[in-house]
Image (cartoon, rainbow, N blue to C red; front, top):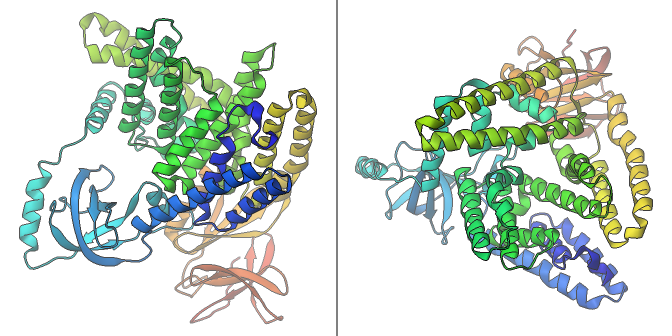
Length: 619
C-alpha cells in the first residue's frame, strides 16, 4: 500500500500522525479540515479501507482529548468550591504540588499550593482555584496544563483556620520525599561540594535537569549557538546514562541481555524521575526501553515504528502533550533524525561521517516550522557548534561518569582519579564557556526573525519531511529528490531571512506595557513605557541574538500622559496599528490630525488614546 509507505517499515506511522491531529483538533478545530482533506484524497484514490482506519484513529484522538478535558477542565477564571486533597509533595520552586478533587474535578487533579504548610489531608475545606497568569511572551497556563496542573489553590480562612494550620504544620513534618527526589538532592549536594561557578551549574543541568544555577547569559549563549538542546533532558542524556547496558545488548548470552534490559529500564526511568519527568525525557526513556525489549526477544523493531508507538502511548496517557511545545519539538527533531538515518543507511562510503555531519542539519530542518516562529531566532553557526558539541559532550560525559563512580565508592585509592576528573571537568567546561563568551562578544551568532511570516518555516519543514519520506519509498530517485530539496530551500531562504532583514517597520510587543521595536537597517531601537520593561526587553533580545539594542524609556508625564500607555501608530496615511487596553489592534482612519513621534531617522504619526490625551514628540 503506497499510501502507508511500505518501505518505511512502520505501519503505525501515518495512523499515529492522525491520532495526534485528532487530539490537537479539539482545541484547534481547523486541523480537522486537514484530516478531512487527506481522507478525501484517500477515498478518491480508492483506498477506502485505509481511509476508514485513519478516520477511526482520528476519532479516537478527539474522544481521548474530549474525555480528558471533561475530567480535567482548563481553568479559565477563579472558581470557589469545596476541595479535598489526598497527597502533597514539597517543591523547590513553589510550596507544594497536591492531588486534590472537587465537584468540577471529580477524578482529581494536580494543583499548586503556595502556603507555608500543606493542606490537611483527606478533609474537606473551602478554597479558590485560580488560573495561572500568562503574558504575551509565554503561555504559562498552557504549559502548566500540559503537565496536568490545573491552577493555584488558595484556601479561604474560616473561624477554625488556626486549628487547620496547626494540623497542616504537623502533617508537613511527615511529608516524605520520593526516592528520586532524595537521589536528586544527593547528586546536587555532591556537585556543590566538588565544583563551583559555571561548572557546577552546567553539571547540575545535565545531571538533574535543574538549570537554576546557570547564569542567564550562559543560557543565551547556548541558545544563540544552537546548543540549547544540550541543557534540556533528552535522548542524548538518557543515552549517555544507559550507554554501558546498551552495549551489552549485542551479546549472544541471553542472561546478559536480560540483565542489561533490567539495567536500562531502571536507569533510564530513574534518571527521568530525578529530572522531574520532562516530556522529552519520558519520550527518550520509552523509546530506549522499547528498543531494548525488542533486542531481548530477538525481534528488531524499526526505529520509526518505535517512535510511532511511543507517541501513541504518550498521547493516550496524557493527551495534553499534543499542545506542549517541548513535546512537539522533541518528537519532530527525533523523527527528522530517524528519517535521515534511514536515508544515510544506503551510503556505502563515508557513512559515519555523513551521519555525524547530517544529524544537526536534519534536526534543524525538522523543527524549523515550530522553533523559528516561536523563538524568532535562527543560529547562524548551529552546524559547526553541534559538530564540536558531539565530541565535547562525549568527553564530559565520560569524565563525569568516572568522577561520579569514584565519588560514590569513596575509596581512598580512587581519590587521585576523582581529583583528576574534577580538575579536568572544571577546566574543560571553563574553556568551553570562555570560548562561547568570546565568540558571542565578537560575532553575531543568531539572526532575529520576528518579522518573518510563520508559514515560510512551516513549508520549510514540510518540504524536508515529504522529501525524506519520498526518498525512502523511491530510493532510485534520491539524487533528484535531493536537488529538489536544495532548490526549494534556496527559493524559501530569501523570503524567510533576507526580506525581514531589509524590512524597516515598527513591531509592537507586550510586556507590562506595550513596547515598540523599530528595525533600522541592522540596528534595533526599542521604546518602552515602563522602566521595568527595559530590563525584560534586554534579556529577551539577548536570547534572540540581539546583543546591543538601543533602548529608550518614554518617561510618564514628559513623553506620554496615558496611564495605560495605550497608543496608535499610523504606519500609512490611512492605516494604523497599536495597543488599546493592552490589546494589539488595527485601525483605519480618514486623515485626521495627529502628532509626530520621531523614532530614529523616521517620523511616524502618533496619537495617544484614552483619557487625558496629549500629542507628544520624542527627539
